[in-house]
Length: 236
Image (cartoon, rainbow, N blue to C red; front, side):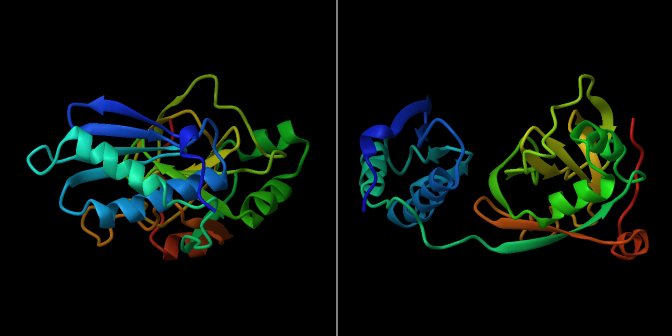
């Protein structure tokens, strides 16, 4: 069954870019449609596109002005939209990320547990038993926005962001969770550390996850964390 394309908007996003809005909210159905569009556009408009940037409910399409024009790309997008189904039976890859949960590696773990009226062990259990979907990647390379966190452990962003969050920090903000790919400022609640590099420009692929993948966190011990190359890092 095809989707109702009149519910999807295509807008100009620059002199050689269009953005497709698939919906107003995040949900697996919309995310699936975004990924279907990426796959088909890569085939249908091969050689005419410079890049595509998928997000929660939109897709930025950047095209080569030397190979095509605005009207052709818009027409190609509409053709692709007519091929999309209500759902995509294909699931993204399941990626297991090791997670060292502790008050040492996650300075906000205890406060989050107290706010939720849970023990730290219960928070860890809830967080690690969920399967998350990669809805978008940004604000930095490798920063994957994962959803949705169980509402029992959802937590608002910190009122005062930290100036330094270490690489690998596992964090929660509202009903999203993520792993910081590099040292950066941040206002999410830190509950642990992941030794897996979320972005490595020297690796192929450069990121272990992509939009549409499914993520699970596997609790590991402190010794296992260091054996996998993990570092505690300074938090300020």
